[in-house]
Length: 260
Image (tube, rainbow, N blue to C red; front, side, top):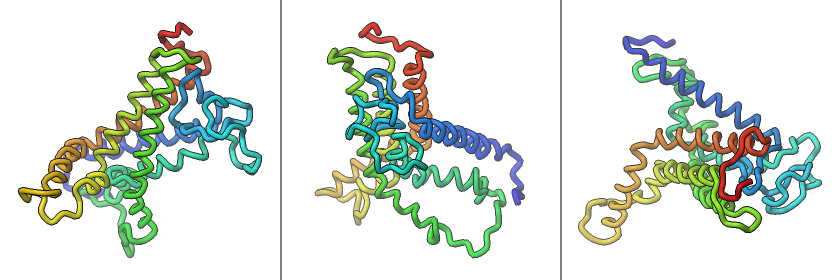
């Protein structure tokens, strides 16, 4: 295993990738199960958006869609509103073509890098066995597009405090978050196929094919930086949650036009 004739430091990229993603997973899991400090005035953490229910202590009532914590939730389930929604945006990321590439390489060593021998597998089935669930990516795309709208709504909500229009550092952070997600989702391979797929002739001189080809070229510009947008949006969503948590705890003060 790991046999290769490469002389460069090929192992740095998969190692750093694994470490960075593992940090994100640990932080996200901790915050998802904490169930607190996810609201700071008119700012809502993206990990808890959309906030379907307040937490059992009444935290987040002004932001919740359906009010009180439901009584039908079993006691063994963590009392955190995030458990109702995080699986949906994560399903888009975890089935993403880029994410598949890096966790196959970084965690499964299958293979860890080009021209490097990875773990030998018997009866290799690719993504036709259990991993056929990766094909759900084309459908989870629609979830991601919906979340962009929801997170922009949260950013809009961040412009009003007690009915007064204003802007704060938190508002800017909340609005950048869905923008980066939009760059990531609209540059996605599944969206690229949705825009320009199933055509026999992209460059035909007339009709729908010509329009779709131009749209496909625009989407391909984002797709060329898909890795950048994947990491930028992932890191930023964690930083957004961290900012809301620190403001909620009073560790830092949000600079804003409301003067509070």
